[in-house]
Image 1: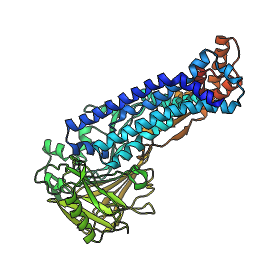
Image 2: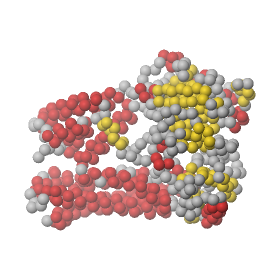
Image 3: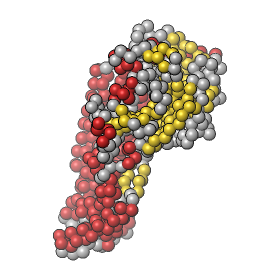
Image 4: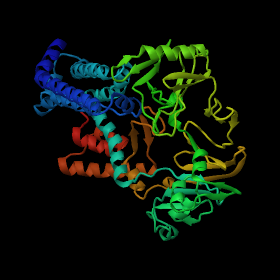
Amino acid sequence: MIRSIFFKEFLKIRWPWLTLVILNGLLMIYIFVATRHLFIMDHAEIVWYRVIHLGQIYFRHLKYAPLITGVLIACIQYLPEMIGERLRLTLHLPVPLHRLIMAHILVGLTALGVVVILDMALLALMTVRFFPVEQAWAALLTALPWWMMRCVATCVLMLLTIILAAIYLPLFYARIFFKPVEKTHLLFSPVTQRFLYKEKIVGELPPEALRKSEDHHAEIVYRDEDGTFYSRVEFEQRLPFIYYKNMELWGLLPLRLNGRLFDKAEIKENRQVLELKAGEINDRRVARPLWPLLESSPGQVRLVFPEDRFRMTARAMEFVNADTNAVDPVLTTRFTNALKMAGFRFPARSVNGKFTILKPFDEGVFLVDDAYRVFHVKRRDNQPVVVRQYYGLLLAGDDRLYLLTYDDYRLVPLPLETYQPDRMDFKLLINPLYLTGVWSDETTIRAVAMDRAYRPLSRYAHTMSRAMGFPMETVYHLLFPFSLQLKSDDTGFIRFSFTPGSWLSLIGILVGLFFFVIGYRSGRGRWPGMLDIAVVVLTGLYGIITVSIIHLEAR
């Protein structure tokens, strides 16, 4: 009997399913042509940089294909049964109910699984055609959650409806009524010896902000730690080491501060910014399979990307040419031997650097070998330079942050209070007179100003305007008892997270239940079933939408 059910379902969905297979194949052909077009319009190394390092998803059109395919297969399977009321006849067959249901689900899952496997195989073959094999794995890992989540469409259509509503309804509401507000910019003024900040005001604008807004938008305010408002020009004049180009334009350079005279050249030479974001910690970001090693002496003003990328294998520092997608044996041997001569022990534990050409010069990469030793590797005139010294920021196992100085590689502890690297972003701003450490979570930003001997001079903490909330937040909590997210703002991974509502959500559920029962009774002439009511009580607005679409009833 089960075989007969399988055969019946096969006969019912075979031609629509074959049409879906062909449409998915045409979509993969389109993605192949679009990917090939990227390499025609630009150099291969630039395409590799955008895809591998900037995270450009060249197969983004595939994102919604599993969802649409799964929903269509579910509709093809179950809508004819529901409309023709043939499901009741099926329930009278001499087969246990759970086996009957499982047989139908297995047919749908198998149909969707075949489409998924074909799409994955075509994506892998296409990726290997243009990129190294590591990128093929990265592409499959990126696309796999799209396919896996869509299987829910054939298993439990009701659950999928609730999940999608909990993801997208709060998201759409937030995009309509909540304006994106970036974090406050907190800085230390070498002129006034006070902290200044720039932020976007949420809610009612203070009258002082309106009076000072003649040269900028009123919702953007410039203030100091005492609450004094400034115009944009006044703000920038108090931060001459940051806005030195405007200072030069206004004729205010050279500048005399603390008995010293600073011109444009000296300011540029002594400025530096170091950053460590929560999502950049090694175990909280997606590992990149290949990296560029820029030429430190490019022979021109601007840095350029090389025609190759390197990867760290179990035995070598392997270079892959972007034009031919093949290993470069000369560079591979040259750099691997240089590392081995310096005492590097393969395999590497991590590769660290700033992989961009938007910087004044390049200082190579830092490699951590299997024995946890750090090696500094540069590319100079296409020859390797390996140094067992380093500089930058160092995060210790106890969450303390250190500065590795540029000149003598001295380890300097930074006086940061309440810094938590797992959920806070950190920035160190260095100018000719002071160092300013700034760290922040989603609501509060803190800073410490230090002299050039790393001694703390002043501290300040500020609750950002973005933490105050929007007027429409009350309606948000009334409408949505919870929300689901498929991403995390402070990591590079896609994670499924649950955010419960507030006590206002309970009021919203009760009000929604009342109108749902009244509307159901008046529209259909009978009271809703207990299963309908239970779904609405547990999920609020999402349950009302689900019951309206699927029309669940307790049977």
